[in-house]
Length: 178
Image (cartoon, rainbow, N blue to C red):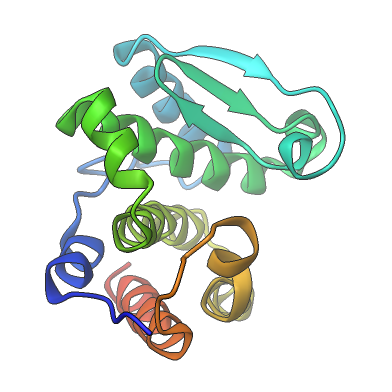
């Protein structure tokens, strides 16, 4: 079993927040408006997914397109806010290192884990900002630690116990900081 390296753990832990400051309003609409300003700055085109299975249920950011899940508009506005900001973190990630380098790194299980944890930190920051109950955020953290990163993403031969422990620790630290 491969272990997460200190470099990847630090990256996930210390990654940049999407927005340096949150809007004064704590409404999900204000978060979506902030996200929209980032989307325009990054020149991302929004595309709604079609299809069934995992592809249609999850949102994805690839290059200049933000592929939103087919049921994105049907979700509660708070869920849309944190999902939108999560995907914009990925847009910032690939812009900061370049598309090709990001794609190559994302094929590596350690980098994939680090990128996803960084994006989930932003989701927690958004949930805390809009006033989600702590129990709901803790449930989200537990789902991500126990399986959220395993189900949707191949983490190869990484030590799953370490992945759970580090994911939980980093996301709980983000909640404490929020």
